[in-house]
Length: 104
Image (cartoon, rainbow, N blue to C red; front, side, top):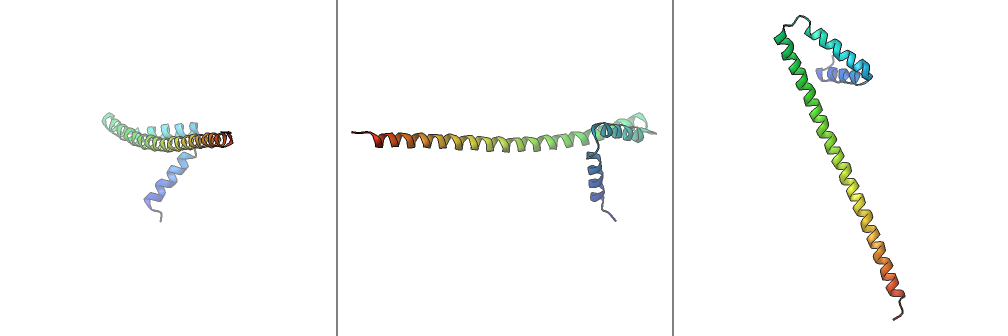
């Protein structure tokens, strides 16, 4: 017997494999099925619940993306700084070589 966690993961993976139109249609159909037989207050309550689920997922995703972007930007900044320092060292080496070649 599958645990609830595995069932949810399988549902998630199946949903995420749908194309954009199938995904939207499936959500609409589920919405209609859930609301059938509920009064207005129950529909609004469930609607707000599902909106909260969506907002939670979006907030988590946005923060993860933000952290990933910051990691990439930080790495790019380090790469740029390392390149700048290498160029400075090359310039210093050239100056030292010129000074050594000078006839005093």
